[in-house]
Image (cartoon, rainbow, N blue to C red; front, side, top):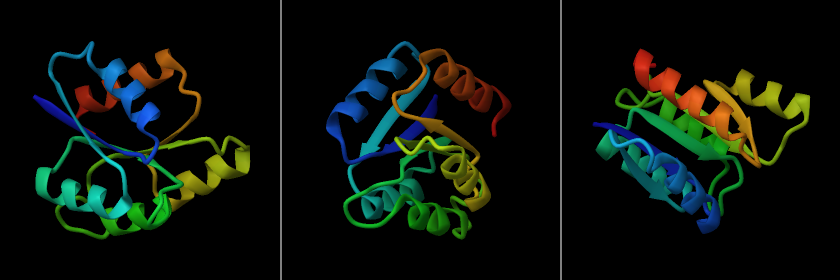
Length: 124
């Protein structure tokens, strides 16, 4: 069983991603509302993929990414940005910051599945 953690403060977006991942019987979906809780869960549960909103109520998604990447237990975990910031410079900033991928909201279903499947299949 693979584990995906989604750190997102908007409950409707968490629910949408949970619904999308229900089609995958071999995926355990975890979710957290704040950056601090997400970091804690990532360290405890060691998910295979982390989905991360950039605008969280406590700390920025960029700070969450920095803390995850600097931690020995979570540093190699792929982190995908899910953001409403869709300008080319926003995406470039995210990739430069260390996100393994950057998806914009609203999510493209086929792009989302393709990325998740590719990362789960390759182990990266």
